[in-house]
Image 1 (tube, rainbow, N blue to C red):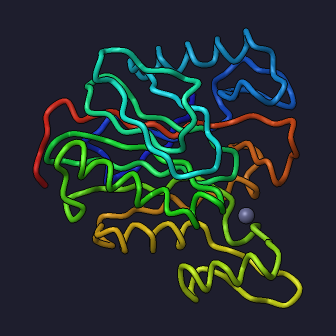
Image 2 (cartoon, rainbow, N blue to C red; image 1 turned 135 degrees about the horizontal axis):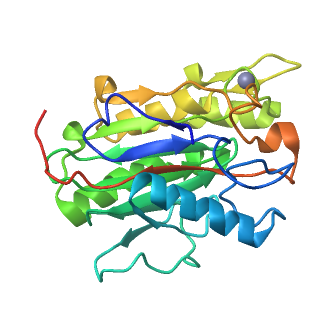
Length: 252
Ligand SMILES: [Zn+2]
């Protein structure tokens, strides 16, 4: 299994899975963690079992709907209801990872070194414009008393500005709603930079720029490492971004 990590989040059990280390067959080979794109159910379950074994964590999951709803998990001791529709998860329960599935959308992991609480958010273009990353920050503030200026954030592997061509209308919406630096308004091939857009959303929510790390690995460019909906179409897998509370909160 190959799991990517962020230097900024070293104090938290966390990571971004890649295709490596699972049992699914093509076109889902091999560590597909998504159950809704046609892969064999038993293979997906085996992959989740391997991830639990590899990390020693439980996983709080939700049914992602490209919105900005956030749910809190782990208070009653369980991982919660996986049928819950939301695009961000927060928790402060040690051993339980907040997790999101992606295949081009941006996985965003947030840790609070002071309280140990964490959040994971899923941001495609809709969730980015809906400011789901800011909603996750607000939930950490509201639920656990976090201060945005203390948070540490990793913005994970996603479709990069190299590959994310969009309609002229959508590129113009990003410029109007987030800022001129997050879209390239080329007349034939307008593109959006979802990493920069989410970084702008996080900065507006009060997270200092030096506390945001962008893992700039493009899912569409790198077929060896990542599933990509844009590259492969509907029949492909999902990778997961996850983060669990720090066992001992720390100030850095
Ligand atoms: Zn690319």
